[in-house]
Image (cartoon, rainbow, N blue to C red):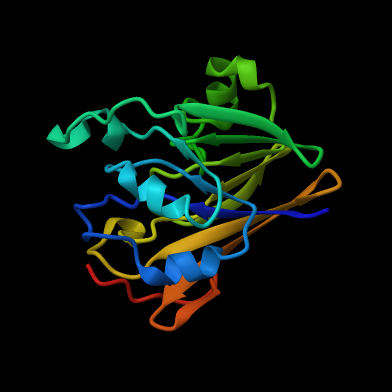
Length: 196
């Protein structure tokens, strides 16, 4: 069996806009789960996503009052760090990991040392940077879907989401660009003209 997980992060609702783009709900139709990489801001966003599939979210600095925002209440769907074994793959969901790395101090190894209870996962899904990124560091596949509403920390616009597919101990990740008509595969070589 293949487990298909929708990935989203850094939605910043209602700062970015009053609600998520409708394309997100269409894109996530049929997924088994949704992971939100944090900076949700208003937790009712999770209620909306949960109409599509079960939701698990990382608690971001935006939920903890960063920038003078209201501190969000505890919610069983939201934790600083989630860790599971899914389809034979050890998966972690958190808001921030130091990837890309900037050695010697800003490294995934340092993060894993501070969070030794998760061991060395096969996959880490995160957010925070607003920049889409897929990289294998050591043996860990690190996936950041970017921001669906504030791509690259620019003005509100159609950003990126991702998918994680798990089956028989293997993991495959992809990033997709939201478009006016839906989504399309993210072109890692294209020069995107994000509006600043």
